[in-house]
Structures are given as structure tokens and as C-alpha cells.
Amino acid sequence: MRQESGTGTAVERAYEALREQIGRGELKPGEALRQDHLAAALGVSHVPVREALTMLASDGLAVSRMNRGTVVTSLTEDDALELADFRALLEGRLMALAMPNLSRADLARARAALDALEAATDLADIVTRNAAFHGMLYAKAERPYFQRAIATARLNLGRYLFLTWQKPRNAARSHEEHRELLRLCEAGDDAGAVALVQAHNRATGEQIAQIIREGWQS
Image 1 (cartoon, rainbow, N blue to C red):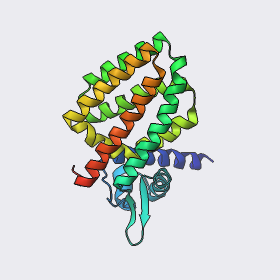
Image 2 (image 1 turned 180 degrees about the vertical axis):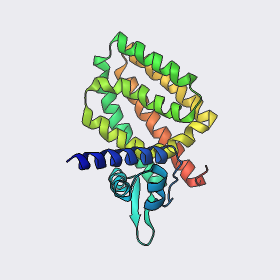
Image 3 (image 1 turned 90 degrees about the horizontal axis):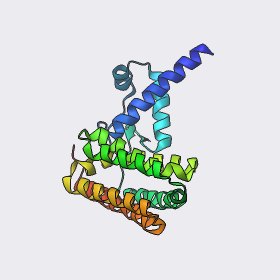
Image 4 (image 1 turned 135 degrees about the vertical axis):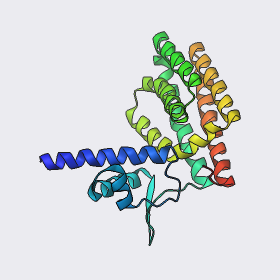
């Protein structure tokens, strides 16, 4: 049993490391995930890497291809738009459920999180803080299944989200919409907050679809 626990820890470590590398775009769409190379890079045996790849495949982040082994999943334009629409629907519902439960203290914390997001300069930090800001509001909906589904959709879009934040125009638009969302929350405008969350997600989907259409750029 002790050995199984150690293996589980190695699997978790490998899974988290690979998921993070895919999310940051270090492992790019279509890139082969070679077990021997990954095991050496992560300092683990082939067994936890193989199990980690299975977990990534269940998340939709990797896929096994005939004669190519496991590769990082590539999204089509339609995939990106569907995932964005999926997030828009779920996050709109979460926003609606959260609104009556948001206290002044919650909104003050969200404002502090937004200030930290706008001050961030490291791309990985920006993406993490962006997710945290939204998650802070949605947590008040108290719908953990919705939250997990959104997290998986965000993971699948993650490698492209980094590229949207690299473009100053997109970053500026996102900051403006975050500020407006917080204003709507403070004003108790449920319908306005829901509509903005949905529009925000769909606009991001359009940006990602454009990135895919133009071709991946590192």
C-alpha cells in the first residue's frame, strides 16, 4: 500500500507538471508527448507518466494518435467557439446564482484581486489571477460541479488564453470588462452582470478562433 501511495504522488506530480506546461503553451498543440523524454525531464519512471497521459486525455488535453503516440490536443475554430459558448452558459448561470450572495466584503476582496491582476506583468501570473478573480465571484453560487466543468473547459482553452493576453488590445478590453463587471455586481444589476459575463466569454472565444485561424505562434 505504501508503494501505491508513492506511485500516486508521482502520477499527480507528473500530471500537474504536464497540465501546467500545456496550459502555458510550452507543450504546443500537436506536439508529441514521448514517455521516455517526459520521464527523464520530470525525474520519474515511465509508469506515472503513462498514467498522467491517460488523465490528460480524459481532460481533453491530450489524444492518442495511430503511429504517433500521444500528442497535445489541437483545437479547431469550432472547438474554441463551442468551449467558449459552454463557458458562457455555465458562467452566466453561476453569476446569476452568486449575485444575491455577494457581500460587501466579497466585493472588496474581488476589487483587491482585480487590482492585483491589473498590476501583474508575468503572463502565467496574469492568467492565474484572471481565473482567480472570476472564481472568487462564482464561488458564492455554491455550485462545485459547475465550477469543475468550467475549470476543465478553461484548461482546454488555456494554451490559447495565454496568446490572447499577449495582445495589448485584448488585455485592455479584458481589464475594462472586469471593471464593469465589478461595478454591475456592486450595483446589484443581476441581468447586466450575467449578460457581460456571457459576452466576455464569447468574445474570448472569437479571439481564440482567430488565433487558430491565423496559425499557432509561440
